[in-house]
Amino acid sequence: MGDCNKYHHPLIHGAAPVFVGTSSVNCVPSTVLLQIVPIAITTPPGVKVDTFALLDSGSQTSLILENFAYTIGLDGENGALHLGSIKSTREPVRSRKVSFHVRVLAN
Image 1 (cartoon, rainbow, N blue to C red):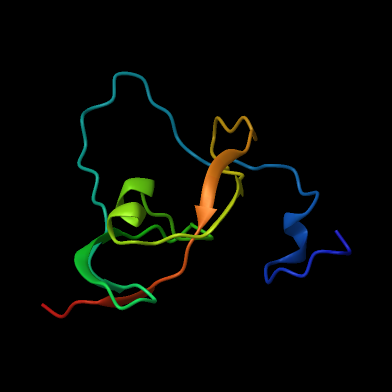
Image 2: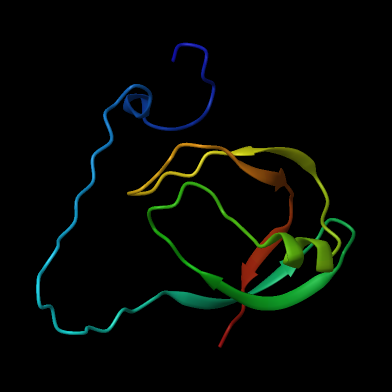
């Protein structure tokens, strides 16, 4: 898309979706390790909250729950969010864009 001013690889526009994965029959239960880190969030008005973040190295954005944003007083512009997944319907999801600062809490 020639009119896109976002910072990302240019092949993202118009490229066919590619899904890499594995499947198995009669698979044995396995352990899934999730990267979870303690963080401190500070909102523009100065509200500070300690919580946890799930790290996703393949994500292109950071997401928080609407209830959490409301609880810490975040507000922002309504919009549509297009989520991509293996079974993506490509239908937009109602969302709101908010701003806050994040830092990792030391152990």
